[in-house]
Image (cartoon, rainbow, N blue to C red):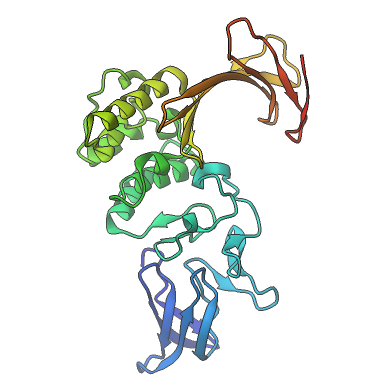
Length: 316
């Protein structure tokens, strides 16, 4: 039933499971309706009190491993004592800056059934997620479809988080032709001429409608955001943990193939103070930043070098 556990089989006996608002089991009954197991939980999923038979289900998509004390969460192992995963998110920064955190650090509202990305449990978000997945799966691989479905579903959650937080690192290409279909689904039109060319595949009007600026200051900030996307963010953008936005240009390939693939421009802007800084960074074949050239002054051409681990090693 839409991924929600309704029953389990233990030693050939069928138990009906009742879950709470995020899909976590709270009690189970046998086929006669007799309660055979129930539990109370700590904030991040550890069992506080459990009575009756043994049931290893925990947060959605998790089951308890007695040997390690961890919760297996499909793609990763979860430690309920710390509220963190033992492994980094395989999808990188799609879920935000904390690649070990669980469900946006809000386990009473969110859940992460696969260990890949968390979702708000609301009918609206589920509907949007489903539509996004259906629209993207036809032309994109599962990884890209998951990004698009997750991002649009989260952005559509009314007031849970901002649309920018929901999008994370999402490029126009990630939505492809499905962007228009998603925008149409939400009853939104593409009316912003300044960003229409770039956002035609990212459902730019989705942001305008959801953010709904309530003051001239908010409207100006939103206009700046879109302008930065169109000018500097051709390859995507993301919101940092400190509230700043970082916009990435397309990588300009190196003239001579080698260790370095090419370079790209990056703009970082503080949404509160509106202060910004721009630099160019050189990327190696593994996607690591190896050289950074800040553009603090037109005549300053200082380049800062970093090794494979990201440690500063000198300048030229």
